[in-house]
Length: 83
Image 1 (cartoon, rainbow, N blue to C red):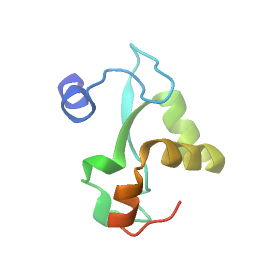
Image 2 (cartoon, rainbow, N blue to C red; image 1 turned 180 degrees about the horizontal axis):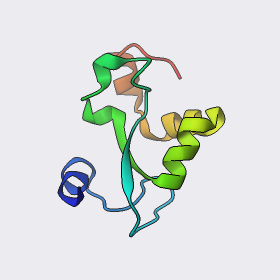
Image 3 (cartoon, rainbow, N blue to C red; image 1 turned 90 degrees about the vertical axis):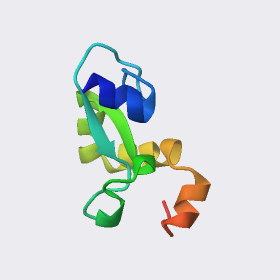
Image 4 (tube, helix red, strand yellow; image 1 turned 30 degrees about the vertical axis):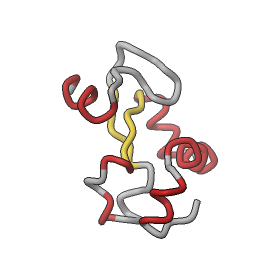
């Protein structure tokens, strides 16, 4: 898992809160159910700690905040997605 974290994101910490030394999980910034075509797009993934990932999955406002932080305007235009 560590090698994947470094390869894709250059980090071994939660990219939202900075927590280190805990299990990280891959979070799809635009939900897989919304856009299955983006499942393997690296630009649509971010590593989050369990706490932040759980919050992003269950708190709509936090989910939107994660989107605003990590999705670039260029990517949003390319995939025709509005936050």
